[in-house]
Length: 314
Ligand SMILES: Nc1ncnc2c1ncn2[C@@H]1O[C@H](COP(=O)(O)OP(=O)(O)O)[C@@H](O)[C@H]1O
Ligand SMILES: [Mg+2]
View 1 (cartoon, rainbow, N blue to C red):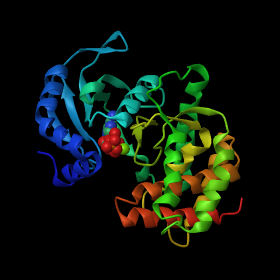
View 2 (tube, protein in one colour):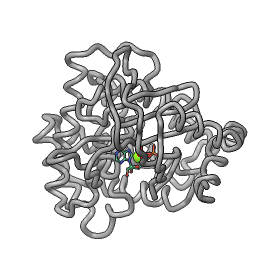
View 3 (cartoon, rainbow, N blue to C red):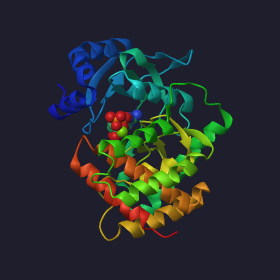
């Protein structure tokens, strides 16, 4: 029942672990169905790295953080290959505990199972056409998440460290034999120059993949899904947003649009425009680096965004 494109992604990203997971998938799904009394399972259309499906849950009692809660009705089942990113996601869902983020009803990290409340109507922020409006909404959701770190200490070691992601980027020059390959050398030098300063800012628990497809309408408000759970400075959070909606930040308008976005984000978050711009450049280069083995289109898109961001005057 799994779509071919999804199976191909799982194989290429997770290798032998992915192969084993695909073979075990029917029994993992069975386990979820029995445990949570699931029926009418409908996979979402845009499967990427995890199996995600809408379902009905007939179970009325669930355990969450040692508390028994009552629940039945529409849920979302997420099944992923058990690995560091999924453990970090589960830890982040638990940490945010429904505050600005979708509520997790139950999970089993070892089996890669997550049960979430279904967000309704659940329209993605990408469906809002007014870019100023959606940037304001994103800024509000973002700052609400960071508030949590003020009141709740971040203790678990399960979270991803932003410094680990950027340490990965140090492999760029060795990878290209001392050069920078398709990466414009000026961009690489800029990241190397600004990153230590950016990283020295105070850290909070970030969502880590904050963009228009992970923010969903919930009644009159908005909730974010799919947190990566990343510890790092707040300025990084705008990085993925400024690259999105994917493939739409390009052409003659890209710079002007991003300039407006930086003004809105700066006003709402209190972070300087120049700082947000540098984070945008750094994240775009990181994103291009991640795309290197996967596809040329992602690499090209992220690099042209990085160039556009780098040229913005604040
Ligand atoms: N709790 C939820 N309520 C409604 N829709 C959801 C929910 N969780 C996920 N979705 C839908 O499923 C899609 C994929 O979920 P997501 O958690 O982002 O998976 P992935 O980690 O593979 O990106 C989302 O873009 C959204 O459309
Ligand atoms: Mg997602």
